Image (cartoon, rainbow, N blue to C red; front, top):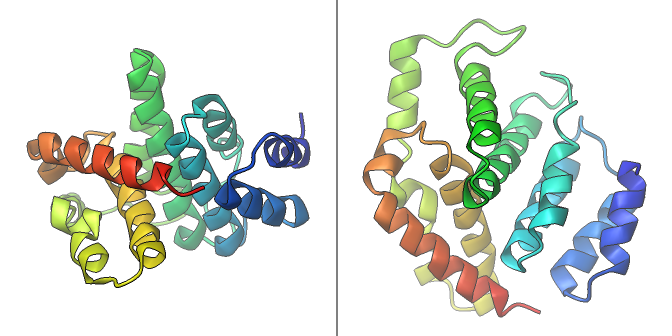
Length: 198
């Protein structure tokens, strides 16, 4: 199945507005060199996860495995691809597919530490960067609480969910590991709220 056929299949098989809107955009255009296209892909994978369609979410994540780093978009593209890989890790862990999850985590860790074609990250700077990922930093709780509209709050919830799952599932961010119980509670809370979006 081509990427185009996958997007069309998802579009035909769903009624949720978010899924339809994103899959329609991807049917028209999906370049792995454009941050906006990969953002649409990432959002679609997470919405499918929210709606319990893990197999389709996995298929979307898997099409990014052959994307060559760095590409034209570099981190504008790769930040979102790595969030998708984090979702994939979460799904594999939920299914007790530990080896697949661990292999993907190793690839993610290597990409952050030793990005091909870029100088390797200084280990102290990389540790410092990873320590910045706290529940507060990832969850966008203040943004959600500061919104007057449910729609805007849900946009922040989706971004928070992507961070909490995408980074939290990897075990590579010490503060998220320490606060795993809070991370899991927030993921559940965000999922429950987002499932109401039809």
